[in-house]
Amino acid sequence: MYRIHDCIDTVRQHYPNADVDLIYKAYVFAAKVHGGHTRLSGEPYLYHPIEVAMTLANMKMDVFTVTTGLLHDVLEDTETSPAELTELFGAEVTQLVEGLTKISKFKFPSREEYQAENLRKMMLAIAKDVRVLIVKLADRLHNVRTLNFAKEEHQKRVAQETLDIYAPWRIVWDLG
Image 1 (tube, one colour):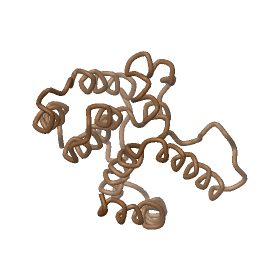
Image 2 (cartoon, one colour):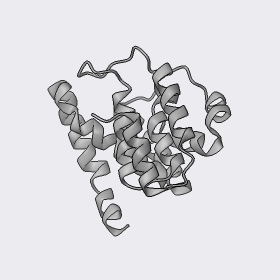
Image 3 (cartoon, rainbow, N blue to C red):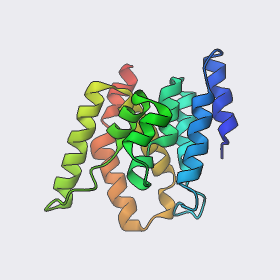
Image 4 (cartoon, helix red, strand yellow):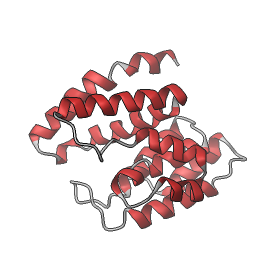
């Protein structure tokens, strides 16, 4: 289990002059808005965004991408608004987080249509900035690593979705 200082130290190793204050600010904010939330494992929810951010830091991603890793679920899972996110972290981080945020306010006739619309939205965001895909893959990696805490039906659905949608990106990953 990583701590935020591990993440910041890793970013500094790759970018000695990086302004890591934004990462620390995102960590404090995520801790505040996710406070009291837990994962299925019973661990504090904050461990998940730290793991995602650490994966991104190990991939030598920039400060904005690592910050996005810490904040990737705040629009979807908390009362945080895009305007508040922009005020605190800037338009670049907000655009990345919005690209990762599922469409949850609309009703769809089926789960398949809902998933298709979420995928379409994410593809449009990736076309604007490939870092959306990189953060999403880091998020999915940690989610798959912790699937053992979910019910078997959920495990199978996520595993199949990962194979169908995310695994093909391995080709893109290997080319990069």
